[in-house]
Image (cartoon, rainbow over all chains, first blue to last red; front, top):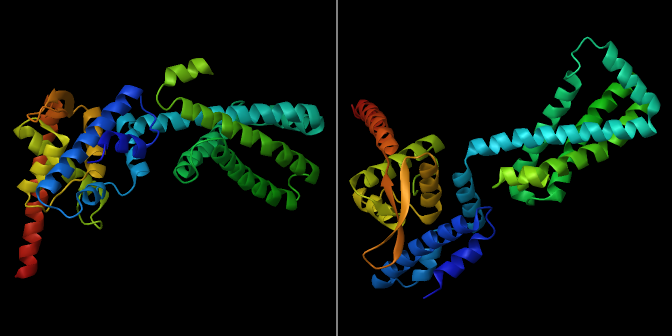
Length: 218
Length: 115
């Protein structure tokens, strides 16, 4: 007879739950499988272990589903928005800091455009924050496939940069944006969005179970 | 839940909630017992496995419809027993009504098709 708790604990892998909560889940699922196995043995099943384990075709998916059930969809949505805002803020601050150092001319042009714009002062930040939320949403969408972490976050940031760069390239080819400004903005935008996405994703992962501790750690 | 994969998610989710809440309205039960009772009561037509049952139970617990507590089972082993909360009972009544209406409507359609 297999050690069901050991088996379930190993197969469920690392779920982001409190250790006691995870232990409870493992004990509960193990007890279920053990009882199922015992009944199959009593009924003379030719392969009780195989039939018992067939109940869980994908353990990683089960771990993710259990985690989602425990934390709730709303919590996830709130975290995407908050960490997306952080992503946008980091990206725009980084981009402006670098631009003020290496692209003073473009920086001054942007500043002048902002001052003469009829849009409210916060609108630029709002666009970047929305873009940050999109990056974080993309990160969570591709996370099940590529796994959580820096590489996946960088990929999400890179994807947003590609879309933005292609749009700017279109405007630049039409002469709306000077070629040099386009090249500088896209060059600065790449590290800014990648770093912003990594920062947002780090916070997203850290806040998965313990939002307050993540705030303190930051 | 061993249902037809072509059945849409909200229908599957709703029917799964109804099944679990209904058997818990009879008596507190642990996970395996819930799955077994549903299988028995539906003649095997509706069945839950580990992968479908526990995420549902945890979601229902988070919503406050059921409450799980560790207790000693007759076998002597510690098991997590789920019982219906007052919020769960309130949820069950309209759910039963909705499903009864739904199946009544489907029956009417089926009779129409047979005629």
